[in-house]
View 1 (spheres, one colour):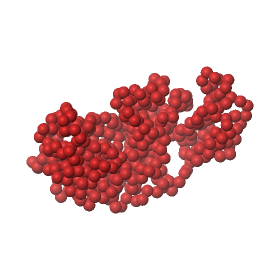
View 2 (view 1 turned 120 degrees about the vertical axis):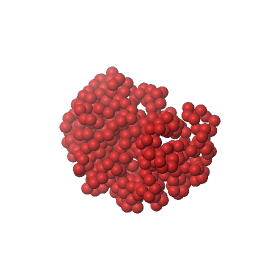
View 3 (view 1 turned 90 degrees about the vertical axis):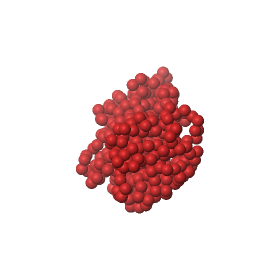
View 4 (view 1 turned 45 degrees about the horizontal axis):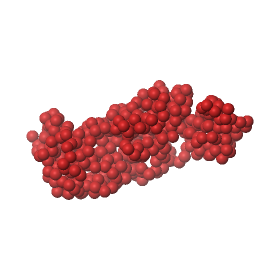
Length: 437
């Protein structure tokens, strides 16, 4: 049997402790699967006295993750610290520079420095594995990096944040407000005390930028993503979507166009009969559209200690199965030096159209003014419906518009015009509609 694979874990929070625990509990099974033992020989965290519910007595303790990366007697450095700078970046660079394999769950780190880290890993001939960084326990990275050879990806999209999906699911199922759902998500541990990173789309954007690089062979461009969160989704939007045969999901979408790559994160109306609409609660789902395979949908637990730990351990096991002299594949499916500069797509028509909710003064001429603004921007309407809006039905109305295919720029310009006309009593709502998926 080959020598044991020695693992160092930096960061012993929920995920790090789970990884250490599973490596111990499943040691015999992992040895049978990998053909060698996997042992935790070094750890690093801020508080050495904290009880983490796992026996780490045989592991060497390091207060400094960078020193562990450089000097510990390890083969694999597992980074579970978090953050896109500081100790996380310094320790990963140190580990790669020392010729050690790295496993990380840090999507923010990869979104900002992934290409640079990939170049170091490939130069040193070591692996940089990051399955846990995108969609938790769903093996989407392995699928795109290894199992889809020969396929050309045209679009990748999905539900990539469990917090947002949990909130939207409960808003629809129970008819409660966004704020009430968010408080429950925080109480249950699905949302952070400061939930901005999740609910405003940043988490989804980081994950999408990694998938975009894998799908299209471009450098990661997390700062070139159109991003909109779910904090402005109301019960009025949820009900209107249901009446129209749709369900609201926060989607990350990346697709190849003739003018470049389009990346966007925003609330989306999807048909209630579609597969993506059936993904509820904290579950994640990723759809990949290709020329050979067609559409592949992967769905499963997207967050939490066990799901993330499972992905981390899978990455460690892949390293354990490799042997000296084995030529490792590139980090992002293509050699890092061959990744193309990201070219942002030009604004184009959205085939699914748009949902627009306007709360307006109930007075003569409002409908005509709205219709004129739409016509002035060459927007064709599929439907326009008026509803009473709350108890003051004599003072205001809700107008629901569904457009045919048009551009984001045209819709925004028309809505800005309606706002300037002074007809609105509340902030307008604009949501894209996806006809398929």
